[in-house]
Image (cartoon, rainbow, N blue to C red):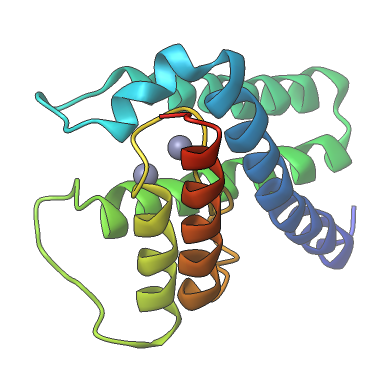
Amino acid sequence: MTPVWFTLIAAAVFLAMEGVAWASHRWIMHGWGWGWHQSHHEPRTGLFERNDLYAVVGSAVGFGLFLIGYLTKAWPVYAVASGVTLYGLAYAIFHDGLVHQRWPFRWVPKGGYLRRLIQAHRLHHAVMSKGGAVSFGFLIAPDPKALATELKALRAARARQRLP
Ligand SMILES: [Zn+2]
Ligand SMILES: [Zn+2]
């Protein structure tokens, strides 16, 4: 194992996870998995929401990968497991912490990329229904203005089709 390769693989997996997160959010969470995700598009009443079960599944996948690495003694599996787990950590910090303020302190960035990330995800939450949402990715945040335009167009199209 070389540290360079380990880091490169972990970083590549971390980046690829943004695509995995986008696809699962778009097609699973806003698809057949809506039953768990719906709670995240409604006001939270307690400390947890049903949607947190996705974080449990994600952690189990990360843990499972580390276990496979341990059993097979294959370092590339550890590198993949590290990339997946680091993405999960970043998601928890930026999505649950920064955007949804589920941490015990309040810190809202006034500008820069983090502000854009928050705005892009807020636009995802502009919709409370399974269909008609925009901005399914997370760490790669598109321009909020473009997202707002997309949302408007989707709303108009859904109104024409008499969808909620
Ligand atoms: Zn969603
Ligand atoms: Zn959210």
